[in-house]
Length: 113
Length: 110
Image (cartoon, rainbow over all chains, first blue to last red; front, top):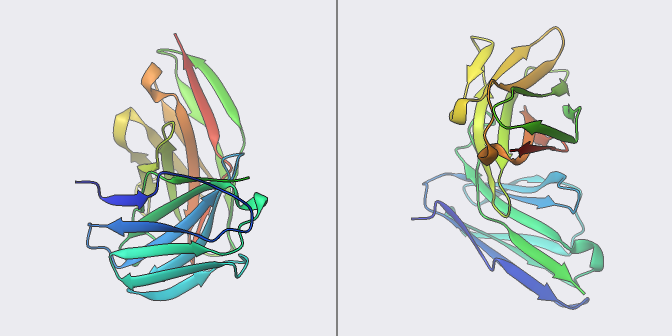
């Protein structure tokens, strides 16, 4: 069984569209994250949720909205997509302590045309 | 806030040679240190981490890292690399959040 899964794996869409990426973890972790990896491989945290509550909300456009229906799921909805949103988005999970190992999903490759 | 600098963006090395990937960090508080590896088209996975105690940390796949508080470094080493070690390696530091370095691309040549 995949520990952290993301769907879809690839997403190609037009500017201005709205899209969602889904993430599920079966590790029983309380904390989930969204990261953005740009074309130069730079990885930056976007959001962190602990037991369905938003903990970290880095400076990202408010077009990005995370939603956590339960502690095993953290979805990312993006409104009015822009060219600069093209990147790989990773979901991760861990127990709620910064010394804990984070487990990453396989990534969703988003291309905005 | 804490930050991480990976000093080499690319490291080419021949198979069975030793390798060192360099990482320096900056923080005003105590931090935890991590090395993650990303194989092509995959997510990141943990190689090793330093929380406290012994400054030499051993990880998976024969990798080890040494925490040096005075030099604020956490360099990753392997005495003999394999082709399969070709990947992107990320140093990370955490305190109140997680910060990753820009990554080092390790390419192992036959």
